[in-house]
Image (cartoon, rainbow, N blue to C red; front, top):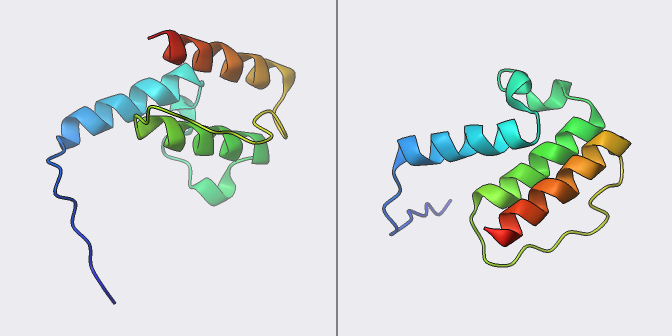
Length: 87
C-alpha cells in the first residue's frame, strides 16, 4: 500500500487549537472524548461539517447541510458559517 506524506509543514499545536476552537463553535467540545460511532446522528453531522471547516478551504460546498439537525443546531451552523465567510 502506498504511503503519502504532506510536503506542507503543519504545526500540530496550531491544528489542535483550531480543531478545539471549531468544536466549541458548534458546541461539540463536550463530545471530544466520545467515539464517533457512539454519537447521535445529528452530532456526527456536525463533526463532518467541522472536519470540512478545519481544512481552511477557500470554497466549501454542502448538500443538505441541515438534514438530521435540530432547529438549534441548524441555526447555529448557518450562523457560524456566516461568521467564517465574513472573516
